[in-house]
Image (tube, rainbow, N blue to C red):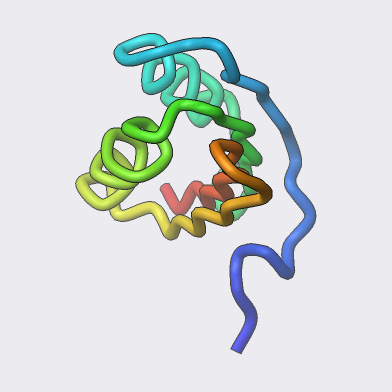
Length: 83
């Protein structure tokens, strides 16, 4: 079974240095520009956004998400737009 990380992201954004709500606003706005099946890569250094805010948003929208801790306090979040 393929995972989101098997797909090449169409777009990558770096929201490092930002906190909520800006982390979610930038992620949401970037997703709006993508087509169904596209993957967005989000680079984030803010733990609440990586572990709570963005995953909760994706769960509500039904978007598959994968959160990978690249190093201490740095996450790569992969989100597949499915609508």
